[in-house]
Length: 242
Image 1 (cartoon, rainbow, N blue to C red):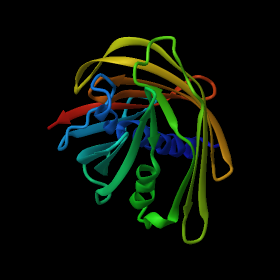
Image 2 (cartoon, rainbow, N blue to C red):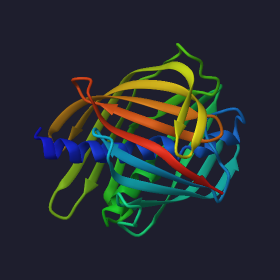
Image 3 (cartoon, one colour):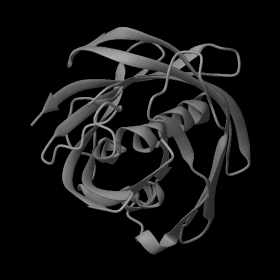
Image 4 (tube, one colour):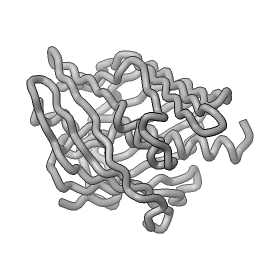
């Protein structure tokens, strides 16, 4: 994969990682001491940085509504992509995600959230199909604890082609609990690592992510490393307002 295409893929991957984790706020409906905020009206802004530490894009997420029924919670949010200066790139898109808690395990269904990527690309939601094994996280995750493998296939039916993304995630583990400082503040976080194999339109890449989650906040920081273990992309929480 050439450098330009790899950089574009990694930025896309940063958005996928962000959607997969930052929008899982509804988990707190079932366990007050878990990793996500579900406060309606909360605005979280994230910045994506390239391997030189320069901002190359930003995202803004607003928790719009939270509804709970039985052991399922659905959270509606507004997602907006921004340029590196913080100016909107596309109109905001609305999406939802469903969270299910069973036996102390959190299952995250991101079908609607990933569909928002297609909306961001000016595609109708019906043009995006997502299948796979959902991410699982124990509500009492501790250092040294492993995380089950997960996978996702996302097919976007564009006008002249079908964009297919396959991600198989393995080797998940909680490494530590430690403080992480960003411009949004200092947060006590669970540090989680996973290795994934990603195929996008026939191009393949293997990458490792390290994600820091804070109780009652969500994703604070993500680092993405390539197959040579070199840091390629970082996503940080840069502002939280309510």
